[in-house]
Structure formats: structure tokens, C-alpha cells
Image (cartoon, rainbow, N blue to C red; front, side, top):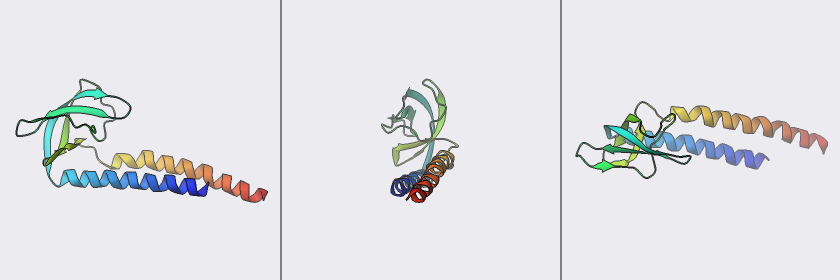
Length: 123
């Protein structure tokens, strides 16, 4: 149980670090555009936007931090100018990952610690 909780904790930390890393990458060479949401499913939210050179982009990995977006919405996005595949909703950042990851880890350890304590007492 402790090993599983530790693995989940490690994955949560990696998720937050990855989000911060992508934000730093976008912040180092930021472009701005209005984007239209063209698809929204469980795994990703796709947007279409035009870069300053007039090229159309629909990043296949989707947009970062898409909470609350629906197909047809127009939203401002920030993207990395030399890699328009890396795009996020403007004004959102890795900080939004802290609450869900934190609550998940709190729940995992809130279940793990009493369970391990109870199992050790029984032995």
C-alpha cells in the first residue's frame, strides 16, 4: 500500500512539474491569438487559431487548461511562437493543477495511512 501511494505521489509531482515546465516554455517566447474550440472530448480539447504569420494551427495534443470550454467558444490563447503545438488558454497556468493534484494526494494518503496503521496493529 505504501509503495502504491508513493508511486501515485510521484506521478502527481511529475504532473505539476511538467505543467510548470510547459508554462515556462510558453512564457519564454509567447504569441497571442484568438482561437475557436473545434472539438472537446474527455482526452483533449482542440482549438484552431492563426499565428502572426497567418498560418492556421490545430494542435493535435490539444490546449492546456481547457476547463469550461465548449465547441464553438472563442477564447484567447497563448502559444510558443517557435512551436505553436504548445498552446494554453490565456490567463491560466500550472497553478490550476495544484488543487486537483493536491486533493488527490491528500485522499490517497488519508486512506493509506489509516489502512497501514490498522493492518500493522492486526499483526
